Each structure stands twice: as C-alpha cells, then as structure tokens.
Length: 452
Image (cartoon, rainbow, N blue to C red; front, top):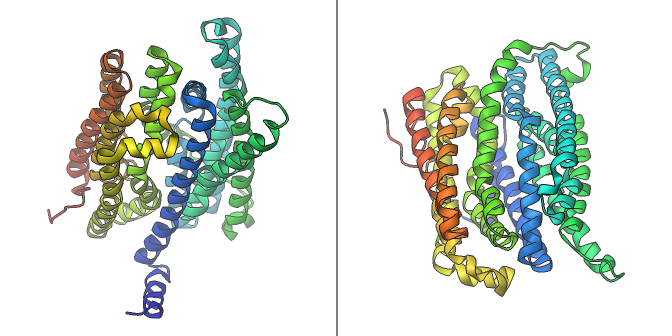
C-alpha cells in the first residue's frame, strides 16, 4: 500500500462524528500532546539538572512538590467533576447547566485558593524558621502557583468535557513547559552573562511566569471553544447540592492521587538530603515516560466512558477499553527495557556523571510503572461511571501503604527505598481497582479481555 492509499485510509478512519473517529482523532492528538509534553519535560529536566546540580535541583523539586500538595484543597476534585458535568450537559444541550458548572467551579477554586494563600502565608510567618533558608525563600517565590495551577486545571477540564482533548491539555502540558524552557535558556544566555546566578529561586520564579502565560492561553482557548449555545444562553443553572456531594469523594480521590505521586519526594526531602531529592527527581522524570500513553489515553477516554455508560452500551465500552489498554501496554514496554538494562548509560548521557548513582532506583520505578500501565484505565472507568467512592477506597489504602513503606525504606535505602515503596504501591492499588472495575461494571480493563 503506497503513501497516498495510507493517507486516504487514515482520513476515512478519522473523519466524521462516530465514536471510532472521535477516539482516533482524540487519541492521536492526545498522544501527540503527551509526547510533546514528555519531550519538553525531559529537555527542561536536562537543562535544570545540569545547570543547578543535584542539590539546587533538589531544592527546586522539593518546593514544587510542597506547592503541588498545598494546591490540592484549592481544586477539591473539581477538574473531574467539570469534565463529567460538561460532557453530560453537552450531550443534552443543556447550555444553562454548562455555564453553571463553569461559573460555580471557578468561584469555588478562586475562594479556596485565596484562603490557602492566607493560611500558608501565616504559617510561613510564624513557623518559617523550621525550614532551611533556601527552602523558605523558594517557597515564598512559588506560592503564586497555587491559584494558577488550580484555575488552569479547571479551564483544561472544561475543554476536555467539550471533547476538545488536545486544547484542554496544551496550556499545562506544552505551553507552560515550552515557555519555561525559553525563559531558562534566555536567563542562562543573558542573565548569567550579566553576572546573575542561576539558582533554584531563579528557576521557580521563571516557573511562575510560565504558569501565568499558560493560564492566560488556557482561558483564551476555552473562550474560543465555547459552543454557540453557551454563547447565546442568557441564564445559568447550578446543581450546588448534587455537585457538593460529588466533590467530596472526587476531592479525596484527586488529593490522595497527588499525595501518592509525591509522597516519595516529600519523605526524601524530610528524611534525606536535597542532593538525593535532586537525584530522585531525575528518576521520576524518566519513569514518567513509561506511563505517558496511559495518561494521554485516559484524557481521551473520560467523556466517552461517561457517555457509553449512560447509554448502557457495555459491549462498546469493553471494546474501547480493551483496545486502549493494548496501546497503553505497547507504549510502556520500550522505555522499561531501556531503563532496566541500560539505565546507567541513559543517566550519564542525559544528565551527566553526577546522576549515575540513581540507575538502580530508575530500574525499580520503571518496573512499578509497567504494572501501572498494564492494568489499564481502572481509575478513569470508576470515576466516570459514578463509582468514585470505590476509587477513593483503593487510593486511601494505597496512600497508607505508600506512607508506611516510604517511612520504612527511605531511611534504610535512600532513593532505592523510595522507588521500591512507590513500585509496590502501584502494584497493590492497581490490582485492587482492577477487581472493583470487574465487580461493578463487568469490564476487564487490561489488554487481555474476553467475554463475560
């Protein structure tokens, strides 16, 4: 088959408004955005790790982790709710409800962000002496990220609910990192040349500027993507009580998920040195390559899972889940093989000799991420079908295990202990959620699925 025939076939598969065409378009676009995000994130990590060195890079990573954790209550699980309610309102063309969920979520996040900034500011004023001077200054610089991250995620969720999956990911996944790379390179070229030092504080200040640019771009993209019905709808309708009830489990799910993603870095920062945090940040950056397919495809699946479940079309849902799980697994295998057998070479080539001691931790974490990818979209299936409480149970169990393992293993083994704790947690909670998906939905989430 020649190139022209392939192009015609791809055009036929991706044109139209059918489910397959929408999934293919969204999947290709989402994978492209995720690939760009991973590549840009890798370039940024290389620039910062090489220029800052393990210790300053550790300060940068630890403070970003703290700010990310502090921002959890500001979002209270609203991004998932906004995706779900936007998709439902779009299906029924209830434009007043769509306007209502956007306005309600934005106000909610704005208020909680302001309260958090005041509380953190007071905490730094009265107890800041418990932090090192480097971490104290860096945290003050990074505080504006709390509202920028939270409000930006709401904008992205609204776009994904409109099935504008690519646009919903661009600001936070691509634009922010790309702008930060340009700002960092500019400072290294002109700022350092003028006699200024490039430190963790500098990198965090540039991160705040890049996040502001990404937020503005996200707001503009949502304004452009609004359905005509929303533009001309003069009223808005809210379901505050129902949304409040849904927010609590979703907030716990999102919060516990973020905590699970950062517990290792948090405890490394509390129990070990900034240098070890810097080494482990590099491990995490490479380990994320294993699950970039899972993350990208989940973004596409969310509204379609909700739609197919609402229609009661279990056969189509199973086909979609099985096919996506196979793609996720195929995308995860190559980086795992590379990191397990050639991890030391990868670290030297990308980050320099100062990071080679992290190769064992890299292999351990890559294998844990493979289990994560191999179980498929378990969390997305439960969250988008009204079983948020099941996801919450699994994530709470995983968080307790993650904290216990990190407290036990980090003092004994350092970054290898953090990687092992995280890998064991991935395996445990994924198997637990996989069983719940089968029990609640009759859906097999892995790449190998047969009839019930």
